Image (cartoon, rainbow, N blue to C red; front, side, top):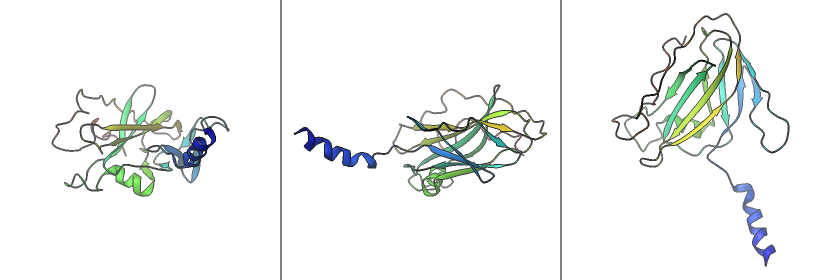
Length: 184
């Protein structure tokens, strides 16, 4: 009797998937693998970025078309937003959302500011799925990079206002403030 139950369940195992996660990052054509859980070799601890470089976060799978995309950079002192996309049309049930791009392309590319001071940064990709009323779903993934170059800009801290993730707002602009005004 046990074998009869286990065999069908094992057959379904390869089809089980989650909402998705970043599997790797691409910087200047070089692929940096993401986490490897439960065995295998670890991912490189850091990648190297040049000022103005494009970085691409790659997903193997993503589920939600309605939602927001926000990209943050953090160092040991502050977090600041460098990219975002929310709803770009008035039709809430459409695929005119930032996460619809991730769903279709399985990637999000953005430019790293060219004027940033060289140091270690954490690019953080935040996807905020809005597929259920009053129940936002947050998905985060980040990498560790070392910025090269001779930039001198220090971003200012962008603080979160209490209540920005609550319902009742008339628009679907990405929360957390605007993209850092010092981005070049």
